[in-house]
Length: 285
Ligand code: C2E
Ligand code: MG
Ligand code: MG
Ligand code: MG
Image (cartoon, rainbow, N blue to C red; front, side):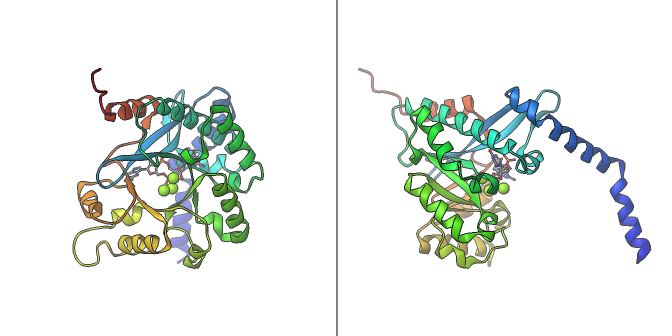
């Protein structure tokens, strides 16, 4: 037994792992200069309803690293979220989202109810300056809070449900919409759902990927959809990767879906031109 344990501990010092840790520390050191040099950009993943109409998008951060190429958020958000850097990343994401919304505002027909979602981590959510910060950025761009959806996760509700509920109510009174991201993967009990003021649940991709046709293959997804509908929440399926998953979701009472099957996250320009191309061509005068 001891030998077995020793064996697995040794694995910790494998060269690849050492390198991975080094790389992480290197990224951590470069975070500040990356922010100063404007290396962080928002990508936009469109969301569609089951009939294929565009209903909104989620803004996802990427680090355009000078030597590593495009770095995905899972590689830097975990440590960024432990320092004040996360507030700077959030500020620049919000500004880029507003810039895109200003450009979309010039199109003839914005789908009704259209919004762009931004991810908010617990540290930012608990920051008492969140509301005033959101307000000052949106005012500067002339953007209505109705166009912004805030995505939070269940973890944020665990420690301080009462405070979180009060904060969410204030944000919703200001006009923001709130979405509960990665729903079903947290450790909190379901009972909070009755008292938590959110607009929408996002079914985590692990449940979407576990779907298959046949007995019980969509049981969890169906149960979450039913629960959301009974409680009056919208429901978005995320991580829809295949034609089969799309088919299985097609006739379900959901508000929307998001995933590689319909569209990958796009840089702002590509996202804007995809909306422009879906605009009805104006009648000749
Ligand atoms: P999330 O909020 O759950 O975002 C959805 C993730 O699923 C994104 O990964 C997206 O690219 C990916 N995805 C979309 N469609 C599919 C699909 O069909 N299959 C699979 N397997 N994945 C799909 P991404 O962009 O790497 O972001 C990872 C996480 O990083 C996000 O998860 C979110 O928690 C966090 N994140 C992203 N942007 C921000 C940000 O601006 N601020 C904060 N605090 N967190 C962020
Ligand atoms: Mg999200
Ligand atoms: Mg998610
Ligand atoms: Mg996630």
